[in-house]
Length: 245
Image (cartoon, rainbow, N blue to C red; front, side, top):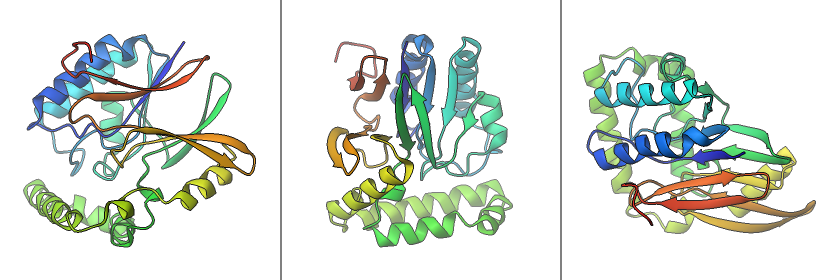
């Protein structure tokens, strides 16, 4: 009995080794799980479900196979793929979840999320996020020709990378008070998220008792997952090529 959680793969045609590592992970590890939770940024960019690329088809087929093997698959949007919608989710047999979701795993009540909403000290990003999550603006963007959407996304990504070079690292991490408030709001002692690319297990003390925040790593140099079993909650890393880490 085990459930796996991953985030921040940032799959793209330019990173075939990461894609190969993800497909290997689905075939060799996730296929023996009860469920798989993907906590956002599965793809480097997502400009609409109509942007059919070979990579998207490959991932959809692999997730379909996982579902057919009896593994339930769930998805929370990240800041890169927040436009991923029901059409593609249906192709993948993914169940879309809200931005913050409490799940029960083997007797533990766990809050899962992408994690970007906890980075409240990055005021510029939070303002941008609120704007991009405006429904009318999303509809307007998705109505544009695919070529234009790809160009806009590339430009926005380039500006984001440039801006982040000048931001202090501290403001791009989660805010400690926001973490505590969010966990108390959901009445949980476990929080699992991604986004910051700073994998770690953080012990916390809440008014209601001891707690843990577990941060998933990205899949740039190695794979990262949280494995939850009846006995433990573990942050694990593994080589993308399948060799021993």
